[in-house]
Length: 548
Image (cartoon, rainbow, N blue to C red; front, side, top):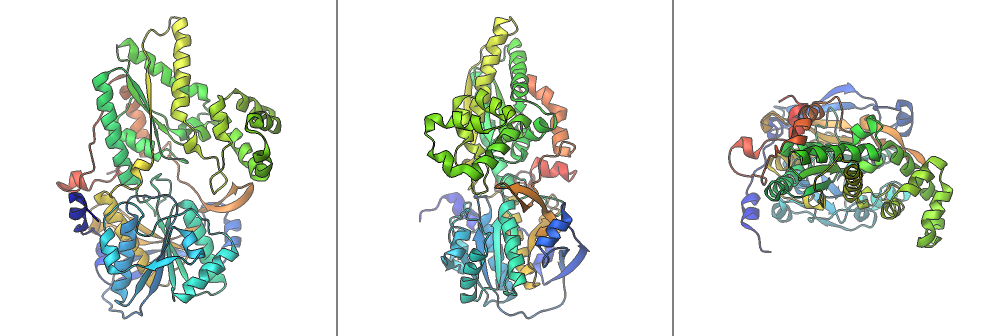
């Protein structure tokens, strides 16, 4: 395999880790925990793994001789920069426990566990993938681990390989499944621990103990580089409005972070739209007003950042989508039998009047996108909805109406972008390379302590890496009950942008100035070598949240 100069240089990079992980560690139990909501329901569903204490690892002078560990690892869900370093940290960690420990990777996600498809991950394989992007070491998949049949099928191969611990690297849904699996294996005394690691570029898997999900740092820096390039082009040509949709289905963390890094003219935050009960027309009017004001100054150009999941946060649209999700979950087969030319009329006839009227008012293309196949969790695939085009078309129509009224006399020409997959497999930043390796190594420590139903946690990450705090948090602590596929299910609560949080407040202080001036910032590409302030800096979001 031919490697680039950067790949060769990165292969030699040694991730920085918390000081405690450089020696023998001891687990210190903290307070016992409860779920964030619906305590009685969660406790009833997870009697064997509910209420466990938060764990912190500290240096120990005690020398321990532990038996070899056979561990398995699964990459679950969408890719995120740094996944390979989680596996490398896990591998090095179990080898430090006992040199005869072995690690097995299940191929293409949870499906590999069910279908007994795996490979042993040896030192040569691990070394090939250190500090690299992607999940191609073993691949990833979106198969949901949720049935007893699947759990038992997986247990067959775990027993055959003498695997006593399984690490599932994924987002909130994948870690929810990991917790269900941990509970089941504990309930039948299967002798298999299950540990999770927090992965998602969306940044919505976090809390007091999980400061950030891995991959968020790298993805935002990749997107911000390209947004900065577009802003530079925008300011050079001075004739286009660029509508840029960014990944982030359930939260606007990516859009907010990229706005803080690049200072665009407009950034819509979904959570604010919902809190203010704004309609699509409210959003369009807001954008059009800024376009018109900039035009008065001779600036017929600008940049607009739009979170991928915006449509679902518009309250009226959210109610429509919720009803669509529930209806299609129960009548999907019937719906697919309807001719495509008649599906719109069919849907309108099945909805409540408010939602039927809204659905009927939508452009044909958007209405069709709302009824496409659901994702594995039964939700509309919002990434397929071209929100950036919908908004720019509606802004153009609004401006034409204003032109007729004499309220606008500028030029409006829009270009569209969607940055998603471009950021998921980038070579991890130094922050993510260090953070991910530490998460994997911490998972090995949780295994050594006999823990199950825990998520690996590394905190204090705005400080130098040797001051980071490694530990584990019970997954049940993050759970609440939510409606999925028309039924109430236990899931990890997503962390949305907090409108009273420091990152959003910092944004609101500046956005009116950024709207009317051309205050663009050009972050440039990720830097791996040079001053620590350039190479190792965490996201603006994390710095603001930690008041650093």
